[in-house]
Length: 114
Image (cartoon, rainbow, N blue to C red; front, side, top):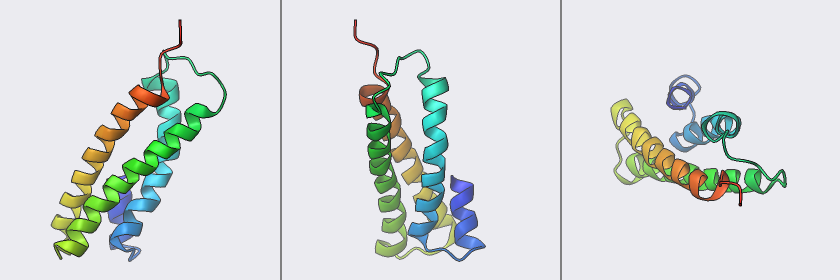
């Protein structure tokens, strides 16, 4: 995700926010499959689609966290250099990932009811 954001920003001339959104959406699709079939494989799915809807809604919140960190660094602080961009991006990815893991465990990949 970080590589994709840097690639879009540097080589394709994307804005700091677009450079975060596009790779995150792509990684979200991969993330659902990895979480469903690897990280939380021991937890049952009810097959209703509830899991998918909640997963993508919570990923939207995680994406918002990343965009806010990157946007704050770039637009509010006025730091436009590569190091500042990557530090803002890294903070956003870290905070967004922590939120995602916690929320997946709590609301998405829940243990089967007894």
